Image (tube, rainbow, N blue to C red; front, top):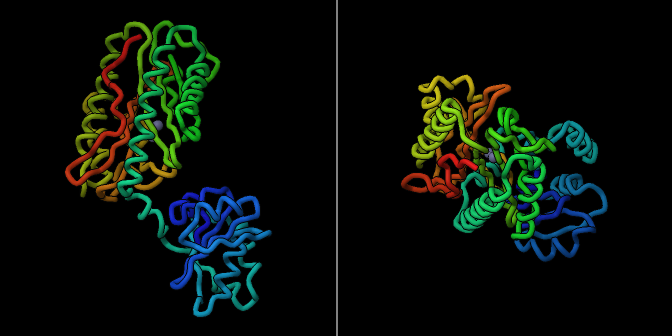
Length: 341
Ligand code: ZN
Ligand code: ZN
């Protein structure tokens, strides 16, 4: 049973908002509703499409239960609500309610999705480059007095005009003391005369997400601000340099964290170093302290250390990096040296 839509898309190519996929040794069937009749026929070639009038997941459960030789159906508990499971169970004949549906210990699809093939890598590189183009574009309108939301809105408007299907997440544009909020969404606050502006954003292109952060400065930074920026940049570059096949995610995190520790900024780095990215903006592997997952060629992760000094300022620098056989390839080549505007 595959009900998580990005998994359904990954396996079948179907991009609609309502679907479930049932896979047995012999057959693959995708269930969706009448709104997607034409679209499903166009997008799906490797599975038989069935248009249903009730819940696609319930239909998938019932179809699986009716297949000869199928005694059990596994589902991903991370993507299943208590209510879903109750509804699926209730749709089964009494003798199957207790034992037929079984919770899988690990997602079967996540490890497949974590390693991108060349076609996926090409799309992700394109999405990442589009992000860089947008950054370059909005830099031109960064000046004191412009509201944060104007920067975010222009970025999103241009993204659509340049072919993005949407944004990967709500654009973060946080300036001045607000840059100390790691997830400061854009507000009507005007950009300050003097202070940092953090822009964290991503586009969706052919289903794949990009993600990047740059922090720029309006005016002339104080010595302490420049020191903090240089420390984050050093940490970010150390972690990027540590990327390679076989390296554990915990070691990547430590590469960034140890640099900030050396600068006395360990406490100000309040989140993990990065995350996998693909059809979803956050997907495995997690690049955090103690994470044992080893990087494999084809994985795409973000490297995004930051420091946040409450009430004063914050800085984050984020790249997308594709793991290759010999190291890491940065997909977001926008400049990282501190830009003063
Ligand atoms: Zn980001
Ligand atoms: Zn990110």
